[in-house]
Image (cartoon, rainbow, N blue to C red; front, side, top):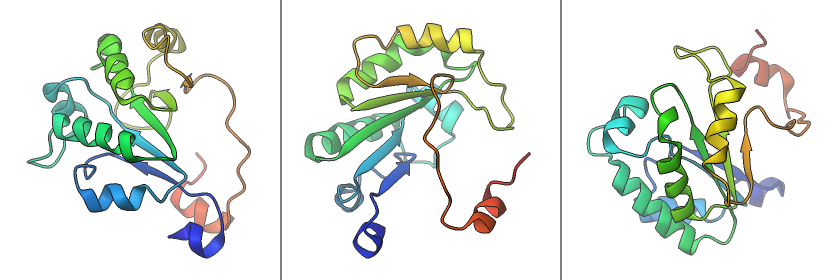
Length: 163
């Protein structure tokens, strides 16, 4: 693990699809921060939005995330992507977040170029209201991210070219 070699805090962003595996949860428990994606409140929307591999179900992921939360001593964040397809399900998504009791909830909409249009800041503000009472709720339009210096600028630009 990077932390043991370089001494840096380790954050892992996961699509949550393998959280049901005990070995995956054990490895993730070594990270300082785990950011787990949950983008849908129902199996139908999960299949539509995330297009998971056959055999991967939303219930399996949510149950595994709840088990992970009970075991994990680090900082758990949920990253929830909102699109036109799921924007009307914010109350259901907030109930999922409450069940999982994360330290932070990141409410996102795609801002990088992709096949779907981002939701407007006003839509995200309405969605955020459904998450009142949860700690650490932030939308992609709020605040400014930390200043980050890449370890290798050239390598980073190969993966994340400027537009």
